[in-house]
Image (cartoon, rainbow over all chains, first blue to last red; front, side, top):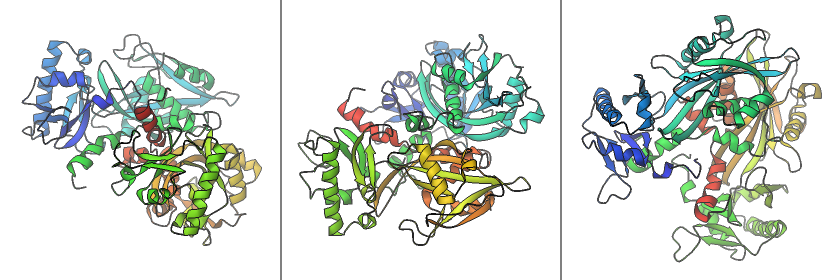
Length: 305
Length: 305
């Protein structure tokens, strides 16, 4: 599920109403204990506690709005302390926090703070591809602007973005194709949802359990993506050998490289006969986030299902 | 990872050379303790044991052939005792047992006995589809013969089969399409590997951790599959609504229903906007068998990687 270097096993779950909605790393738990009215922290080595280890959002925060407000307070205080890198990227953009994608939101949290409490996030990623005159499959690869706050100057999918509240997954994908690559409506009717890549990584900003809704878009040979929102510098139309080289290298935004690996597998470019680690690769594109997040509720609290 | 009704947590791993290659259910462990020269059984409640709980194939069985012979002896004795349903389906067909798909075989085991020691198995599944004159996507669904020893009289993919030793995955898929559905060579050039569905289920025969290599095959509208090896009774060309109904019902061979669910997801028939459990469904098509089987080696024995 996680590499040896992961600190996952030392993390505590974040619970609301006895339901796990996040994963908090040790170093961040140390910041949250400053707010005992908002978080009850039960550490693995605590004694005499009835509850399993975890970070519990106060049971007195009954309504989603109460929780959102309390968390906002915490994150603004921590931001002022300026010890957490994640909060330097404050975006004034709220993410809904649900137990599952279609569930009710338990609260909202500032996007830049979401990795501190390790809540699941959702995004759309679009593979733009076409065929060369001699019939070769080619992919459109974006190059992120040097001024992007996250992963500047790195390779990317043709378009991608976080799931904006209020839009359906398809609406969000259409919007991203239009904003990031100026794909005209007549081509967008070929946009097709083709799966989900799930992954979990961590860095100095916290823990990122991500659900990436994957779309394929076949484009006519004479179409060229043009960026409209300043997020991409350039687009390259590349043969698959070149794309393979890029996703193995260090210059690709890691979660986008996974989406392209999934494309290669679905299109029969990487097969079980050509790739000894095929089974493991497919598996690692589908980290069982739903199961990891639901394990606790069922086994410890026996919530009726 | 597994439903509440699963006995997974009570199962013991099967280990060879400190590497997990299988999963053995409690009721089957009770049979294996009859052979102390071949299996060392360390139960969870055993005391004073240095080894973690598990079923260990004797360290004195050094060569793959020695292990194969010892296991064959065990299975033939158990077959004579006639208490294990699985062994009533003896097929005189050997499966290679590896730690990973591309790894070296540790031993071979009779196919009918593989579920008793819960080793990973590999198979190919082919989705045959075409478009109706009005452009509607239609799937070819097989109906298994009433005389099949396993899952008789149930719906199935167009063709499928266990991975035969000595064939590549693609060769095996080509062979199954030819034998089970009489697909002529000119259509077979469109056969495309598109992914892997992994699952684990259990029944009265034991535990089945299965890796299903998935292929899509687009067929011309005038082609009709014809069964040549007596495994299928009939083929039906069905609209997707009808296929959806069938895979939800009880009449479909369960692992084949998963392969079709995967088809629906890859072809944009089931989307995150139409299906509230989308994330969970995609995840359950990719049970992390590789991770489950490797967990023990790494964490308990610290084998250098």
